[in-house]
Image 1 (cartoon, rainbow, N blue to C red):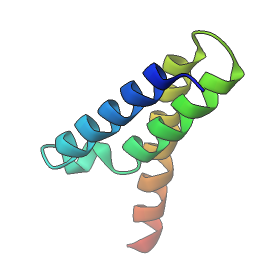
Image 2: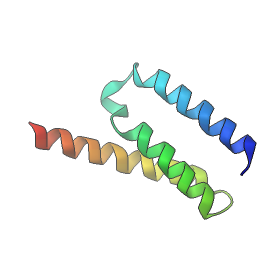
Image 3: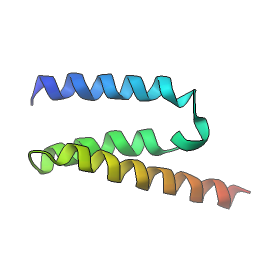
Length: 72
């Protein structure tokens, strides 16, 4: 596995964790989805990690919002 990708993924996850405290309403589920989506996109092929991260963030945020609405 590419060590540069792993370092960037860890740095992005760390930065997202720091930003999660700044905007908790937006980042609910988005960070976890983005990390999973980026990893999946990386294994799909070249250049798909960014698209996977965006799609994962959207899906993760949607799932978290749906879960929060159900809990109310």
